Length: 113
Image (tube, rainbow, N blue to C red; front, top):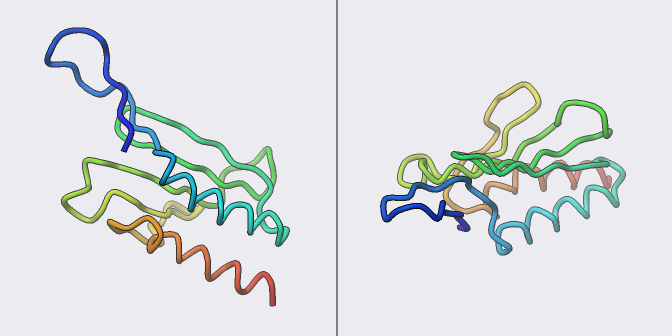
């Protein structure tokens, strides 16, 4: 987990949550396979104060079809990673990113058939 801190005082709070390089690897690997299959076309990454979001788009100028979220505050509860659908439903949540991304891997298998 990469967390950036404000440079003021000893009781600084994190300013934003970000994906670490080891987390982006599996996400971008899946993204590349889905682009090659013609399913996905664009992505966006947001690093906010409580959540990092990798948004996946079918076309550039529309709402994301999926969001991969990282919420460190949920690490000890349901798990810090989640895949969320276009309608806001949580498709999968857990502690292991690769396991959570499997819900999208199944869609790749169907796309190639």
